[in-house]
Image 1 (cartoon, each protein chain N blue to C red):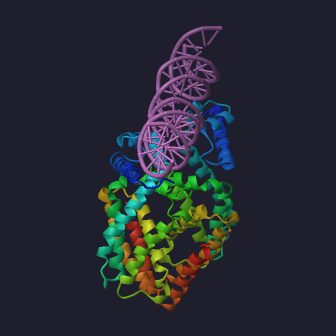
Image 2: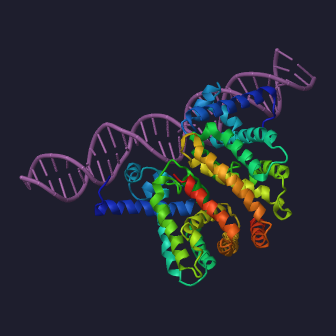
Length: 221
Length: 221
DNA sequence: CGCTCCTTTCGAACACGTTCAATTTGGAGT
DNA sequence: ACTCCAAATTGAACGTGTTCGAAAGGAGCG
């Protein structure tokens, strides 16, 4: 655990920015650790002094993207719009932020999903980052008018985050120019989910929704 | 493209079985191509004559597992039981078959999901394998009594396959002993989905379901 | 200045996945 | 029996991610 002196921190950030630039420009697999180190004028050994692995640098990209996403989405979440509209905003800004990395999205998600590392969005290690991501949806839910039924209001943000994960997966495989198909998916799915939420007031449906919520709670831990 | 002479086919299958055994016993990452080749008494070059990459051998594992799954599930799908029961059978047998590989499931899914290769379950390359997997669910749907509403009968198998993918993802991250949490998930989710299907007769719900189906069709191609 | 201790840097070395030019093998055609 | 050629096999070599022991900095202290 290196203490964060000024010089050290500068080197570290130089490595991050260099890595992210190379990832964006030449892709994940073609970006070698040696190239990153050389471009940052340090030795490969030094790069490994700051980052445990190449995947670890990808993890750094996640964090960056997540903060960008939050910074982009939050100001757009104005109170009073319905859930569908707000959901659209959050999903679309998410895709906006990831956009430049689409070509390498494949390796991206492949690394993200392996439970070995702190990288995985589902693993217990990244619980903090996940909670922060879910809080963005919680905010959207809080802003929405009318408010979703009380019965699901608490669990809805997490459910929406799962939706976001699914959309991301779709986006990775979306080879349409500019990933327009993903945009269409978002535009159609958002109001649909909004309708579903309203529908959950119906006694029959609510019963099911309760079961689903129960299911999620029961299987967690 | 090697023609399949008897000797050649034998070598190929020896490599597959050796690789699968090593994967199962020591995990994916610790199994080296050199070890596979050595264990099969061939050179590493020969291994690459038969398989384009290490991932390609994982692809072979998929095929094997899928056929095992089918062989195990089909005889158990007896006509007349309700959809929930049949779904339970298909999902549980799926987990049964994957069981021995759970420890290496992480790398497993990580490789599966990268869109680069023929390996990916979503990529166009593995469309055939995917269709075959979906057909298993189509069979389950066909066997179920009462029959699901006509409106969704056609698309239900695909939707169930997505469910199966989700369950698999859950299973990969399930670190409970013997993956009992996944079993519980299946036991609870199957009747739930069955109920949802029945519910789709309701005019309000059907409207939503139609939208969802529309969504899936619209985004595909 | 010299000494100590920790941080930081280095680059050679290792194991791995993969490639490839060269070689061997084995069967079909004559 | 001989030739020929594609199929099959080999092992050295390349580039990669990663490790590691050793060296260089540099801050505090006498």
